[in-house]
Length: 245
Image (cartoon, rainbow, N blue to C red; front, side, top):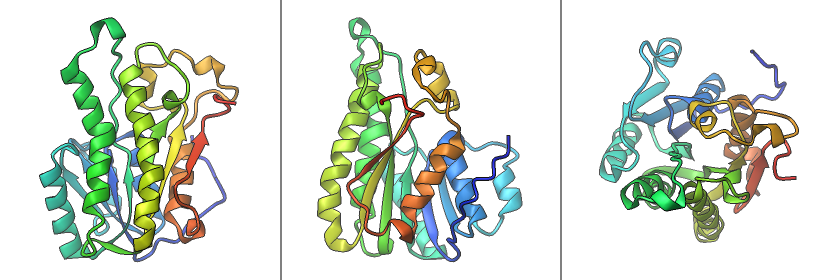
């Protein structure tokens, strides 16, 4: 369903990094940035073939097959991109991993994978993009969190812990990066119609407005990347259809 949100952003000449850009929220965010005139470095382990974004935006869509937990490869991708296209104006860490892992079957290896993708990859991006050679003035970080950090869901304790830690990191990092003029915020999402959330979806009926769309999330993400949000940092924006109300 095509939605006319009646809100547009002008990112002409700006460059952004989006992780998890092959599907879901990351894909929608990358698409809307491209539609708004931006050049986008998309990072994911796999991309759809054929890639509609590559066909429509051959000069401004730069997909790179990289695992976000391979920090050296992520830095190499950023290095190559900035050398060819210029410094970045913002980053969206949308890559995420949710695993149903009840307490009685906790597995440290699986838990570590969830933490590596959801938390440590984000921390690595903060550290990497702290470097002046990679970012423009007014740089904006946006991290994708979840209502699971605030409301218990059976079997999602590790996932919830990773998102709660992510939000705490955002608040603290915002104070440190402010000295460089960088902003750090997060969006806390309810049940969005993506493959990952529907696999663990056992509480959708409790959201007064039902299931959200990727467009609902991307709109706020683009706002936080824009200059209209230049005085917003350390904040967590809840987009959940009333789930946590």
